[in-house]
Length: 298
Image (cartoon, rainbow, N blue to C red; front, top):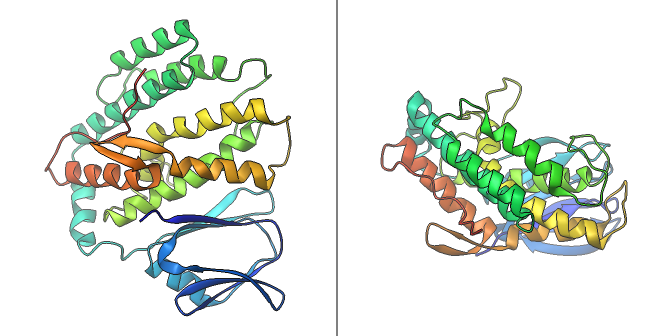
């Protein structure tokens, strides 16, 4: 079953649990109910939202990720279920014991997939596509030449034709669209890792000591292109805006329901993420060598 992504951001709401359902209320008036077992991600981006304690415990028990944003609409925290997998202890150990060559090969696969996806996003620019495909072939184990950064410079240079744009976390539009899309995708990736019995903190390439989601950021890389492709289309649909509207956010959330092909699976991206996370677990356990990543045809 496809899990639902729910965002609370338009007005003050009170969240509670009743009869195994998430109840959303405004004042004393109930606005809606959603079965907790249907919830995949709850994103809260309004400072006046209030909760009962059972909202967090019940949603986490049902495998739902909860993302909390600050007054600048930036995510400042994420709650993830830690009992999503009965073999969690064994899989944590496999992850911790993974050898450096294994991690370097994984990063090579991730970077290659990311670059090929970037080429797909800008597929009408034949010159840039050819350059990116060449770079993807040059990525070596661990990417010691930092081809990823070289590809990104080429990619962002042609990403938004006709728009004065520089990719920066706190830059002007459409950075806000990209940041929002990445936040939602990151939460979904982190959730899939927890369900696979992996610890999202211990990355294979990302290792910033202040980052609690290094592995999620690793696995996010080959999925960024789905957000970027959607933002590219939206740039032609909407005027440049400083604040994202509900319509824009809803369109970005739809990315998680796009059809993908991953390791023979064809279906919604949010479900496909679990195949990728499961393949990563198998590599850590020594039961496989390759990640199952989204199939990209150029």
